[in-house]
Image 1 (spheres, rainbow, N blue to C red):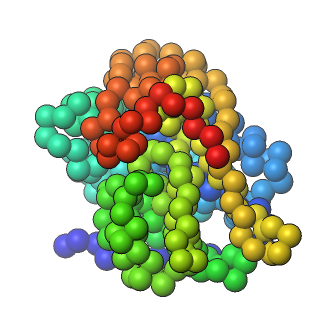
Image 2 (spheres, one colour):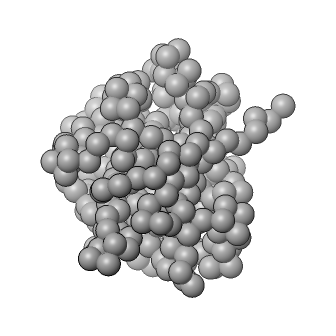
Length: 278
């Protein structure tokens, strides 16, 4: 029987809120993210991850245990759902035989082999969605979309499709993940935010990764800032090589360029290698 999707309410948040997704088993990046949060004085209850804590990189168990100890909020990404169900693939709905599909057959079994029973138990307890209030706005966190955990929503995705998510959740702000690229889009007082991921670069030719901070402006309205950071990506890539993990993803850590653009719409594909700025 398919598990019923759940929503966790974390109430009203005050002060800065840190948002990120896609740790992807990258411990070096996660540790840098924790340092940034500490320097910004953002407490753990104001930190939210959009899922896919485990994926391509070399330290899935260490990453999960670090997130548990950090005591932040997270939803289940498609990878966590597949792992906790003991399924044989990452659940990204890649086209059979595509490069992404072939790559997932390399890193996913490694992640399965590394995770402890306690890590799987923690994934079992992850909610599918998080809702909270901020600056008198209802905010709702999804992985891909409200209707499909592994669904891809990009900046170029028709607003009509995004609008269905707002209607279903009755939210003013939707915070999404999964697609790997940071973006923000406002339409008719509705706001879709994707903070990006911290485990892999954003296909712009740099090893930087992306996160987001919510805050209040001078009128006590929501402000949001996309922010990049550098970390020890060389060590993360070297650990992938040592564990004989997917060479294409190891190369992406070093170069900032994705091996392929199979999941991307044409608009995002055309931006490959172009420096991202907000």
